[in-house]
Length: 306
Image: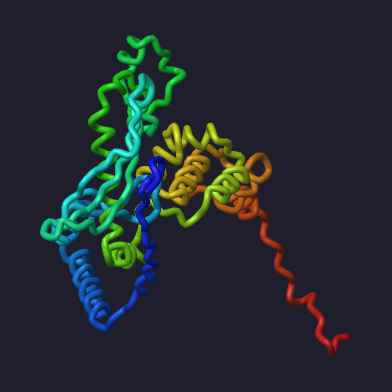
């Protein structure tokens, strides 16, 4: 071998054919049993308004964190978290977390989910304070959104929300991962399908505002009658319907509207419907008319006389 030659090692490339995915009767039977058990778990163990329920702004009921924890326990798994993105700045705190559900016995991953949360969300970006506190912050209450004698101000303590934002991201990731478990998403969809939804509108917003325009009611007056700052947040968001809002507005307008009978029309109505114990105008005069004179019978001629 020459002095400058380098020893070489031969590498043999072996092509491996992909293993085809095969379904077996046994696998199908196991899947059917798992789905049946999952349906039993969801229908018999999960409780409404505790494990699942309505989220404001979302029409269909959703799984909540307590319900996700029960399903994880049933599948004998626990969550393992990975932070995919994290931002901590003066005006923004944001977390994006991946939750991997791991089986306690085999240590194998069963499902994954992603959840995110940030201080840009309304419930973290703002908070409600009384008028005195708003003034002490150098704000003019007249320019602020108001609800239940409180005013909405930008949260000055967003820097203290790091733990809250991180935990909320993890909870959302858990719920997403749980619904990726075999049969869970389909079972939940079947549970929620056709269920009466709180605050679900039978009418749409275009219909609502069209009805108000035909009655000559603008947005400002509608809000004033309903006593809300936002019909969407303070009325529909609290489970009330647009149909109910329209009924309240119609009732308020009816109370404001004066009697439609004026002048001659009112006089005519008095003629038709006098008050109790009062005679109709002209009735007394008619009763005082002299009776017609009776005809002398001798002046009446018969046919023979003619």
